[in-house]
Length: 340
Image (cartoon, rainbow, N blue to C red; front, side, top):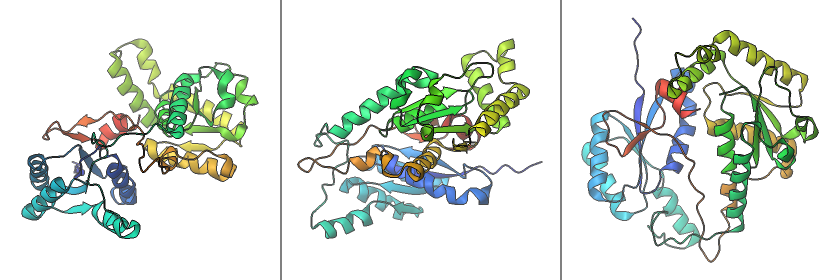
């Protein structure tokens, strides 16, 4: 019998969306992949909009029972004090991502923090030029999904190629929400490739590949969600021999076009793959490559900025936790739901 080790929980506590803390923790977890031989060495549970003391105490009490590490980003003084008090009371391991940074920024800027979460009604967003640029990129990316409108590919910052269910659409949406105009094309054996593929800038094309076993699992899960697990066509769709043939077709196409970078997305998160793609674009195109939208939002108008919309994720409920807790990584669920 094999011993199954359940990933340890990490609680992320925020008085806003918790996305900045979640990204930081996920990046840090990459340092432990080899130790655990998995891309999900911990289960992340995000507690958002923790703005009152009662909720703060409840979260920390649960963390103590689950032996969880608590990582928090709190700017509201009352919530911050409640969490820190409960952490000391229950002797919970914790990391405060914000306080030291904000303290140093106060000294550096010779100013005092507002202590108001980004979602607070007192914060009035400013619709900047960069915001509308991001909206334009999202709309473009939506229209270019699944090989649509190849006549407009010349305007794309990036064209992503890959077989069905290798993660093209989530990756495209993720980059689109960061200001990149992204198109994607599914590679299907026997289907002619659009002529626009050869006339556009070849330095903007990236190919994706994936392990056949992992792809089969993703497709079977998708078929189950569609209620077609027992259909003959559905079985063939997820058949490993067919998948190997599809991947070989893609591999041959990539080999014929060595100017296209090829990335293996097996068990890779969308954020990590996006970062790898942007590094490739930056290395090949330099300043000609567009910059991240988040960096553009460093511009301010009369001291006010605007926060880009959060990336939509499909959280999985964690059994044993309240509805306020949402799991973004955990075993096979992380493989199927979190990545694709």
